[in-house]
Image (cartoon, rainbow, N blue to C red; front, side, top):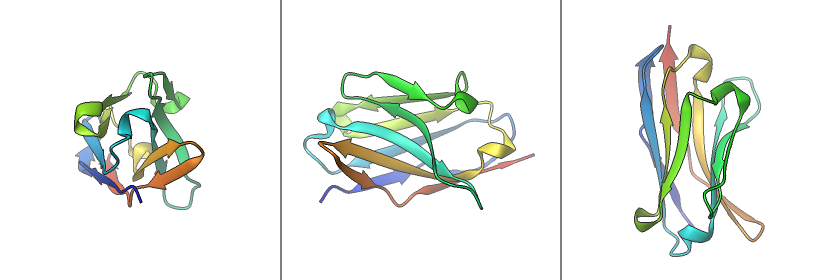
Length: 115
């Protein structure tokens, strides 16, 4: 069983920045496609950004040019750098790891952006 542990959430003013981290327990981390999802109150969970093992990147349109996903395989960690945050970015952010059709989820970290 792979464990994903997120950190870095918190309260920030609009226009501010935060960095989320997610550390995985798997020794095969470098082979995983890693992603960040978010779920705002009353809304469905949505994919925010993903990074493959070969570092191909994908972003939802609403965060392009504001968020950056990256990974450090030596630390088994994936990051989400968030800047120019908006109140609509308020959500619980979940880390996701996927390999060979099997998915793992973290418990989530809350990001609150005040106006």
